[in-house]
Image (cartoon, rainbow, N blue to C red; front, side):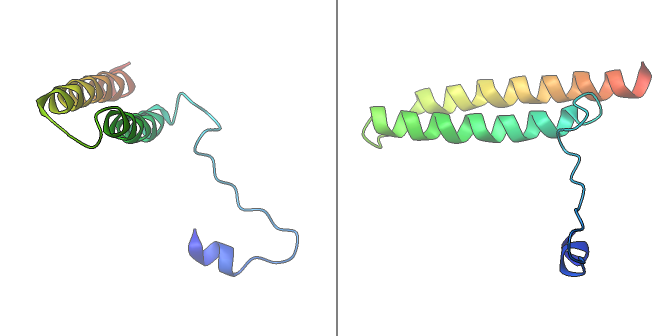
Length: 82
């Protein structure tokens, strides 16, 4: 992608089809949204608890990551077999 952007001629457009077809890119979207959710949760939890992180945050992250792994497994199996 970087090589293409460096050799662009005037008026050319590089296609970046990450969110163009949600069905084909569902795993990518889930990864990006999970990263966004974890960043927002960390920020909000830090502000609310005055940067005192405890086991509650660890449990929240364990839940988020468990849902993430289950969702990715379901999406990958569905794409592979159906």
